[in-house]
Image (cartoon, rainbow, N blue to C red; front, side, top):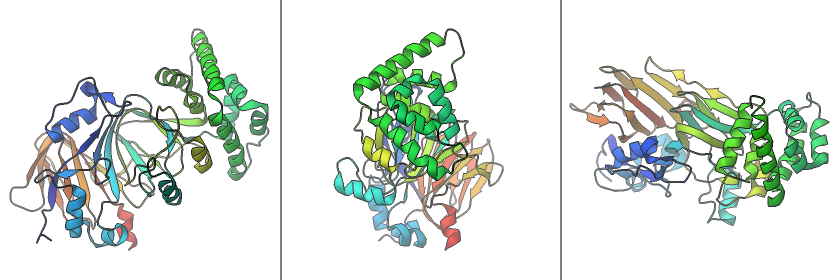
Amino acid sequence: MEDSPCHLQRLRCSVKNYDWGLPGRVSEVARLHALNSNTPFHAEDPYAELWIGTHDSGPSFLASNGVSLKSWLSDNPDVLGDQVLRKWGSDLPFLFKVLSVGKALSIQAHPDKELARILHKLHPDLYKDGNHKPEMALAITNFEALCGFITLKELKGVLHSIPEIVELVGATNTNLVLQTNDEDDEEKVKPVLKAVFTDLMSANKERVTDAVNRLKTRLLQENGVRQLTDKEQLVLRLEMQYPSDVGVIAAFFLNLVKLNPGEALFLGANEPHAYLSGECVECMATSDNVVRAGLTPKHRDVQTLCSMLTYKQGSPEILHGVSLNQYVNKYTPPFEEFEIDRCILPQGERVVFPAVPGPSIFLVTVGEGNMNTGSPKGHVVTQGDVLFAAANTEISVTSASELHLYRTGVNNKVFQAS
């Protein structure tokens, strides 16, 4: 092992060109990856995700020598800190990403640890690891997502106003919902919601195509005489992106969430969601397990998705972050693996990120400045730079121009608890 690994390591990161990404000319992922890797982007190609971390599907490498971050951590485990080493071994427990969403991602959920282990064992080609994948999205631009189920009261409203859904799920399911009391305990509502949603997602292709087409025709006609709701407008947009897809109709069952820049949304295991548009930074446990059932050309596993969901109802919590100082907001989800700090530093200012007992990753998205760990000259940093910071390292940042940066690290509650 080296005597004292550098406290800060510049990283080169991987990019994903999934077809839902924004075209290079308007994609934050394309811009940041081009700056990070010193390679040009293609103006019309989709750029969807920038991956920062050790996951085998999109690894990061040390800029200095091309060694993968994963193997460097394995050779230098001390940089992770004792508590992280004991809890997660010689690897990063989190994966950090930037997303540029041009069209909707699939309606999906991520399995809990127990289900992830089973799926990975049964279908290693589809489910690449045995870990859970709680995640948090922090909006860079205005950001839209579908997330979690609407309330029973709202679902009754949907069944009253969207005849195409009633036709797809049938009279028995519809009456089951309408006869359930709004005051009933959520545990009583869950099996009803599960039955209706499962039947919807399992409907045969011809019936779904017919229902989607009739829904589209009706909404386009009604658009001439009344203002369509946000959800109805969304459904028409989804139909253009994914014609004849059951996800177009499933959208009526889920909450439409709109985040402003600086607002965040966290998603636990087994919660249905679909990102729709906008750009965000995202952090998650180190996993790439996704169970999909709609709005996708990829493999669908409808039965697994419908059986794994929690069927909790109601709007998700929006995090606004807690101010650490005038420049930094901290976003702490209820998951051990990660947290995110968002820093907007005006020109000529200085901010200190105190030493923490675990590793951190810094991403600079706007501007330039200097990052210092106590050495005389520090490191010049500029947009597109990604740096790994060792545990127990105080980081001082000064800005040469307005600087935007994000820090992700292990959730501070892990260190408070031990």
